[in-house]
Amino acid sequence: MKLSVIVPAYDEAGTIADVVRRVRAQESRDLSLEVVVVDDGSTDGTSAAALSIVPAVTLLRHPENRGKGAAIRTALKSVTGDAVIVQDADLEYDPVDLGRIAARLAAGDRVVYGSRILGENPHSYLRYYWGGRFLTAAFNLLYGTRLTDVTTCYKGFARDALAGVPLASRRFEFCIEVTALMARRGETIVEIPIAYHPRSMSEGKKIRWHDGLKALGAMLRYRFAGGPSRGAGVG
Image (tube, rainbow, N blue to C red; front, side, top):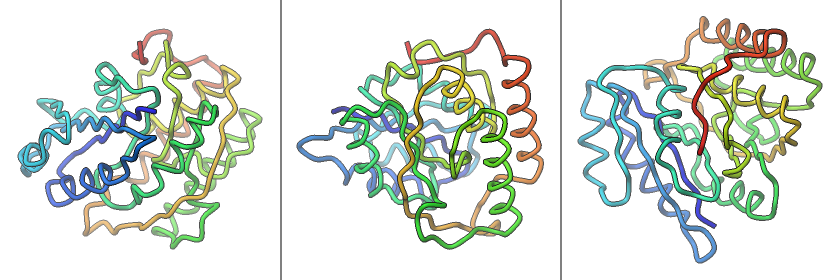
């Protein structure tokens, strides 16, 4: 199976090369990887760091910072894999777990999420941990799902599961948007435990409290207003 790994990156010059090397290390006889890095308007040399490991990576660039969701949508226009997954450009998520998620996709599961809650992991700041638990509980209530970690980065999709999905989010609310659209399509979302190594604000953690409010707004919008009628999905 060929897995397209999308890596949105904003000011991650210190970790991007290591992330891509660790992702590439997961290749095997049964799993080939396409790594697409989107430099989302970085000012710290992220593109140069990514270019240092070409041809291990395809590099796309935004001239200004547009947000994680926008970076993912840019990458989706060029991916060629049988399945797609998102990998953050820091090292909070261990690329070793990519192989396990890919195996489930190869076995026929169409949507596979890596849950930090199912694994035995340290917590991030308590406000983020409980904020994520609240958003997940609210999502389950609104959409009739039984997820444990709706805000996880590791979201894997069979290519045809994303075909024609009208993604339109620009920032961190992508996690809610794509999950809401999967739920509305009737897709079964499988969760497996993953490792998680939270980083601090001083180490570059970028999500903020207002991103949680935007995520909640997106959740309500997709549940009761249907979300946007236009957007970008995998062709």
